[in-house]
Length: 158
Image 1: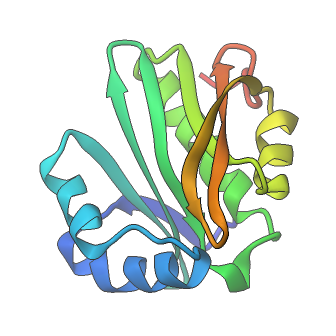
Image 2: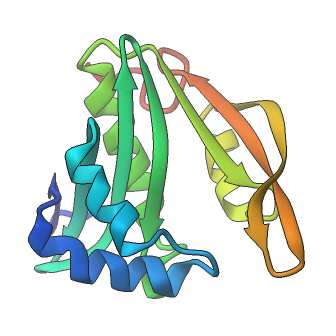
């Protein structure tokens, strides 16, 4: 993670820049309503800022000793520069410190860079949700991944 960056809780004032990133990054983005509902649900919402600019965000939920990663996104112009890894490392450290043992996530089967990232830090594919995501030509499968946090990247962190 870059020295001039930090992660903080998302506020309602962040919806505009977050939605701009969401709409730019995805062919089928979350709606403003879904994003706003994250504040009223038991979801944890954080933004990743660098030089006072939101460059990404992460949304997850926790139940007992498990966490589900619901959305992680870096603005397209900043992708492939380590920001996604930094945000994921932060999440793993943050939830590990709260006693979380396992992290679950879903990823589009076509998202090879995300799949590579998850596998490179110790996540394993555990299943497939067929025809889960909307796609330009029908539906696309979601790959289910799980990571036992004691074995994932950064396992030497407290």
